[in-house]
Length: 295
Image 1 (spheres, rainbow, N blue to C red):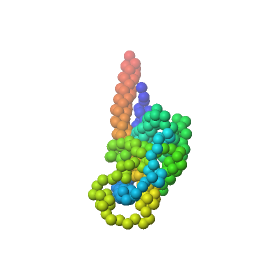
Image 2: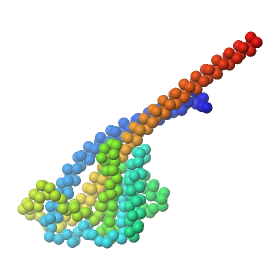
Image 3: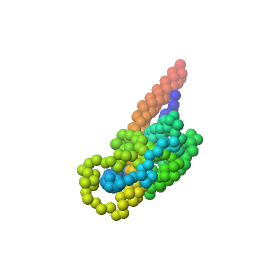
């Protein structure tokens, strides 16, 4: 049975741990609010970009020369999991990697060769540990991604696709629903999905019906817009992933703090019992000594 001193040391250690988890919960909560604000500020730009691209595509006479729209038989695919640089975020990283590995097995069963582009230290280390060959990895920005980070990933993916090294690029990430819920999303990045060029809605219809003069030609404008669209979609995914990571970490640290409090209560009860047992033992020894003296 543990002594009172042992229990006191354990309680002191757990209290120190709870201070750390509580501080990490507060930090994650503050970062989550900032990440949500960045997503909300970015959405109007992303929506306007998609509408502009859809309107320009309708005005184009031919889309044949646009490599990022060309669809071909899928023989090689690139998977891009977006993970975090740090742990202590519950199942945030594990569920993205689990989904990415399931996708890789599915593609392999269909005879498709898989290549890996990964964002985040956790994703890179997991793939390296499993002896997967990683074409390129990006680290150091999972908490606060910048548009330049999305550009770097998008340019590499577009380069592989335009050179014919891959026929499909899929990004896997956590979509932010709430601080308690993060949903894994698998989205085709390249070729650009047809639905991206067929947006519905009042503004898209106005763009279609309007009498616009394009200078240069719509095909040339679209050729410049498509890479920007890919970058924008990746930037949105990075922001969603960042918010999801902070939400998952905040929830995990809150649960850890609660578990620490429960453990402290349990150990305190054990310590009181141990102290009472020591006092009872001392009383018995005193009584036994007194009986021995009077005998």
